[in-house]
Image (tube, rainbow, N blue to C red; front, side):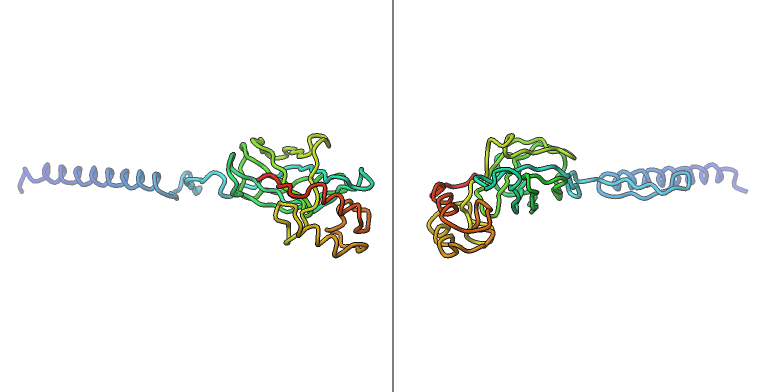
Length: 214
């Protein structure tokens, strides 16, 4: 028997074992840094992953927006409203939500898909109205966003061309109203009294060549 062989074999086994441990540690480090890692701790699955903030968030807020010159002036504020959420100072929407407000201009629980809590610019546009913008709004679950500032600011009416308007009141809008005089098209009935007439036309003329917020 070679009495010097056993220590050499032991050293070899120790080197192999140490190399295997280092390789395993390197593999774990790589997986932690670049993607999900599945394992077992006390018999239960453990998953470590990188979460992209905002990728799957949905935040619900309450919204108020009041159209101008409705008859009667209270309890007659319902409209189809498009809400956009934007990065501050930007115009490209991160999220677009269409809602129908109630008779008092409110909507509870408007879902903002993909929006995590934070500070954003928000816009509101009625389908017969010019866009209104609020800058640097703190958004969080259940936040209340009042575009009317306690009914002191109104959505300006008269933008009735195209599907949701072009955010500008011009001759095309006026001609559409004239074409339906004494009709009952809801979108052209700007004051929502049940009839398209000279009052609606005068409301649009008052905003002629007015451009909504960008």
